[in-house]
Each structure stands twice: as structure tokens, then as C-alpha cells.
Image (tube, rainbow, N blue to C red; front, side, top):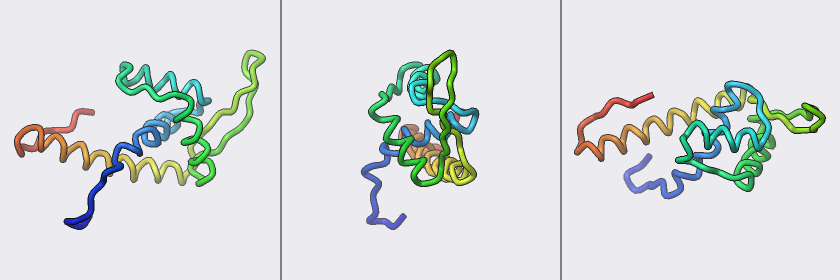
Length: 118
């Protein structure tokens, strides 16, 4: 990043990062993803279906996800799973966010490097 370059939209990648992370673990359907994000962030991050589905569709269009229709308990749902391209995208986003978290922690601790909690 050059000295003049900024990242004003750095929060825009949060839903994508969280969705890719969840789908790395197992396939899921849209509403299940919404609930998992709320549950795993203790309701700190709550994204609705209006955010999740456009991200899922864009990731599928870009080849990061694949989908399949599956009937469970009489209900037809579309399940999403990660592709190899999605795994690479997750790794890239994770590295970017790790660097950002480190920089923010450094700012909050007065310039001292704080370990990243995982």
C-alpha cells in the first residue's frame, strides 16, 4: 500500500470473510449462515439475509463457492460449499485482516505490539 493509498471501505469485506470461514468447515444454507455468524460472534455481528445472499451469489459467480439443492426434513434448501478458489480467497482475506487487526492493536496499545488472540 502506498503512503497516499487509504482503505476507507475496509469493513466491506467482513461478511465475505465470515461466510468463507464458516463454509471452510462445512456446507451450509443461507439462513444457517446468518444464525452461525450471530452465534459465533455472541451477537456482536448480526448480518441479515439481505447481506448474506448477495455475498453468497457473488462468491458463487466468482467461482469461490458452489451450490447444490438438497431436501432436508421435507424442505428444499440451497447449500453452499467452498471451492479451491474460495479457499485461496479465504487465505488472502485472512492475511489482510490479520495485518489490519495487528495494526489496530498496535494503535490501541500506544504503539506496542500486542499478540493476536485466536
